[in-house]
Length: 448
Image 1 (cartoon, rainbow, N blue to C red):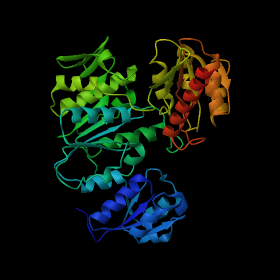
Image 2: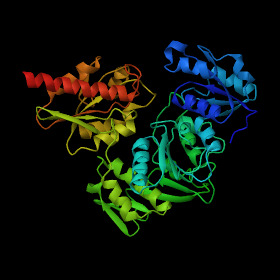
Image 3: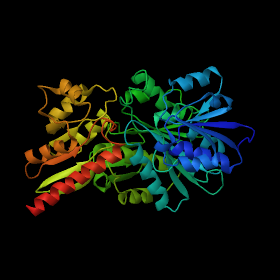
Image 4: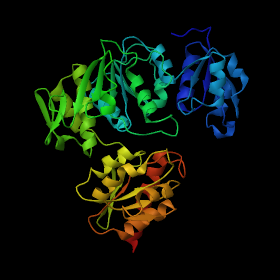
């Protein structure tokens, strides 16, 4: 339950902020809502005005009258309003932390973070639990917000949460029964002081766990292993190299104790997804689920949209949409997921990464790189003279040029290594636009 004497300030009125506001209202609490965007830019503004005290187009000093702020993950922690709130001594939490504080005691939380693979692994764990008729929800950084579900009521057995580093920055007690850290690679360096700061943010997922909890960790990551020494939770490692890990890859088989599963039974493409499957299996083991049934459930899982999603074949050329690949490490995984070199489309809104770190992967796995978006000149500087490049400003022109240069059997893969905000609302909008361009090309070829 919540303390109805506490006044909550909601900073940022995207889905998590709105969900938290209505949860507070439903539980008899008091919330003041604030967003820098004008009301006409917020779809739910009229309903929010009816139901709450609100302000739009500013973060005013009215917020300083609140006791606790629930801060949207999209608001940088060096924003002027955050600095002002800290100086005033206001407690600040994330919607994930608020949800944890009000959730019923009988539900177990499984939280997944990492630079890449969070959505796939969270969805896979949820799929396994649903296949076993468990009462569970999937929320957080995927789908609906944590607080949009009746989490304060009993009856939900498992809560599967995809968690971003931004959501972890303002936790103060969040303690999942199982916390998964899939990997660490440079990302969001436009928000953090550096890679070490970003890694430390990810490690916060384990901070409040106890000896009764579990930490699922990637053994092959030096950054993870050297930070894991002081964890209180029971550590379960997965690896593609170390055969002494609780879950490991040996040739074409995933091993978990006495059980093994062929990688060809994992329906999601690429070696990175074999690691995601191992993480999901370790979660099942920690929950004492039937492992053969778990492996059987994995076989029926479908890949999520925008993650190495097969789109279509046009005149013998195969298109894949990997729009969710918003950093270099995810692009490296995409490059390694195909048995022959690909034509790769890269570029978008730069997040401060060093693109040169995937030069070798591009040389080994790409016929040509087609670069577009705001980051195209930075990418050109990194790869000029080292990787065959085509620089194209317009996104559709970029896709069409890749197709015109392709031959039968080629793969054209959108895997940008960047955020999408230079030209699109989000990565979904970018991926959907890519798919529509492919459909348009196919219609034109069929009519020719």
